[in-house]
Length: 311
Image (cartoon, rainbow, N blue to C red; front, top):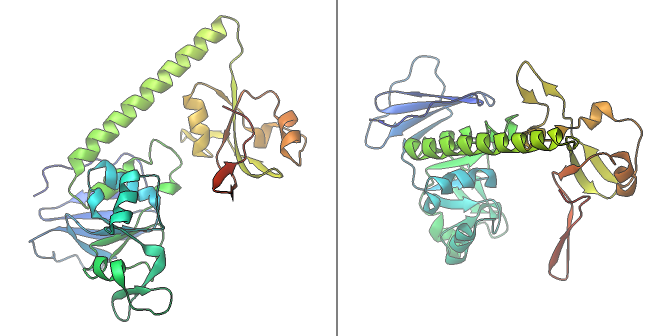
């Protein structure tokens, strides 16, 4: 029934295949989901087996509460299944077009009424109108969410890619999503290509840095920070666990993959700073700074983000 399968390599979920159904387990959320091939009866599960959701696959109508899940749906060619998104407009032009055409709706405007088993507007009046009434009149096959919420809708499935400590593990969650579409072969090809490109780029970066050092240059240093404002700057913990092979924060993994000497400022730097000018002196020996986030303000239709140093 399922000729194409995925092999999970280390993330916080597992999958098993049976004749007519699959069992996905989110190990972090400690929840199990049973994915039953359409047209097949719901299987009899062992005593004590608790399924948080039983979903007919492949799914055709889904909603998500986090845009981190939308990329996997698009990558496997299932953009048209995106019925609900968390907000208006995204970084995907094609999904934005679906908004404009009324094929996808902003789920932040509605909530699920478990008593009535239906969606309703969050504002008064509660009844669905216009595009929302037409788009949400047909039940959703699944709702992908970052946490369990009674108002997100049913059947709800939790995804936990943001909790992975390595960027190499994050794409594995594409396999989690793809299992709901029976698109294992598609996601396998993408992830294999991703890992090949990551390894190739990392090896080339290491070779370039090694050649520069051999020619007399100093290995460049890299630092990752969280920049919320000119007075709220926090370096990330970039300590490395040699046993697990993981960094305390996966953003540090990017610096390492780029061939940089990763600066664990949290544990190796002394002194203090209270604004970004002082921070520049504090981290003066750093060559590359990754700013993981920033505070953006909107002025006269323009978006302006603060930054510290061009990488």
